[in-house]
Amino acid sequence: MRRYRITIGDKVFAVEIVALRGDQARVVVNGRPYEVKFSPAGGAPVTSPPLSPAPKPLAAHAPPPPPLAAPPTPILEKAEPTGDLGSVAAPMPGAILEVLVKVGDQVQVGDTVVKLEAMKMENDLVAPIAGVVTEVRVSKGSNVAVGEVLVVLSP
Image 1 (cartoon, rainbow, N blue to C red):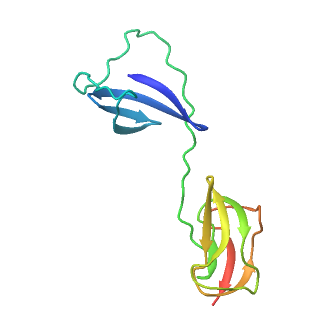
Image 2: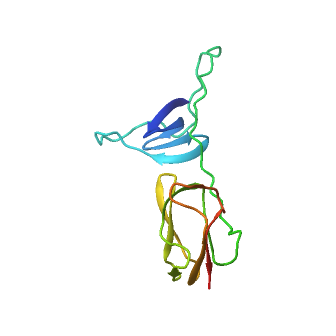
Image 3: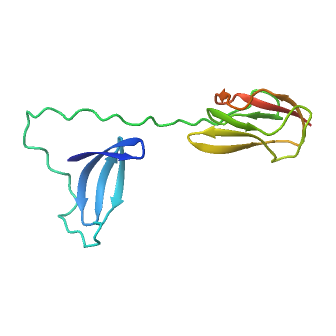
């Protein structure tokens, strides 16, 4: 088996080529198996023996390669608001980029009330009901946890 450490941006991936056949390969990336197609950069056809497990290394006493640090895999959980039906809760942990409402503001269903940055993505959190903002529990720059209530609305 051939093992590689591939870096994309700031993420490191442990890649192991398990088997090859023509333009297809069985690979394991950070412990997950995949069937992939590939071609050389020059576009020349790929020829290799039928797909079979890669041969084991001959040196039985060679020390094992150092373990590769896999990037943490974010686990997203569906947030359940801890308040009433008019609560806007954080769907994932992140940082508040902007609070677009204040107490007393009227909002419609689907209006963006908070912008949340999570995993380098900007997420618009919207009003689930039409009503009046009764509480704003966060401010710009706040870090929030999954399910934390950010804004409370009253119909």
